[in-house]
Length: 187
Image 1 (cartoon, rainbow, N blue to C red):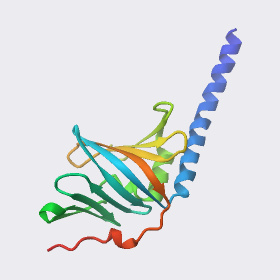
Image 2 (cartoon, rainbow, N blue to C red; image 1 turned 90 degrees about the horizontal axis):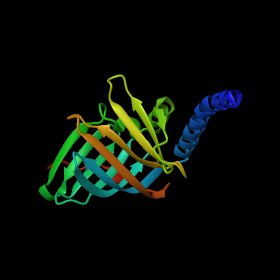
Image 3 (cartoon, rainbow, N blue to C red; image 1 turned 45 degrees about the vertical axis):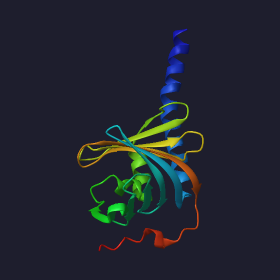
């Protein structure tokens, strides 16, 4: 009986890392085949919920329209993040170089992050991959277990607010007009 238990334990210890590596490979293969995604989102920051729709293009482009009173639009084009509050005609510019977006929106960086991350089978439907960078900042990326699609992320902003960004993919690999990522002119 003890021999069977030891053999089972040995097989389990040797099998699980390979299973996780295989799921990471399936996620990476899915990302390699993905040029862009259109999705709806729910963003939770300090218990404040925001919703909207986004277009994400690998590499380094994102446009999100929030369903809020300020008519907020977030645009990332390359290395610049723009927050446009259309209702008040206010535009704010930020660099993405010190934000998690540098890893999430760049396919090469995202694949590297996945390879180095810790695997957690959150439940039967989701995979959670967590990476802690050299500055001790944690990025957690979520994927659907059934098809390995990106399902969202959890990060901290510069003010140490935890941001949970959940997505529901509507379509993948669409033909998109590059003009939608044009940075607005400041008045």
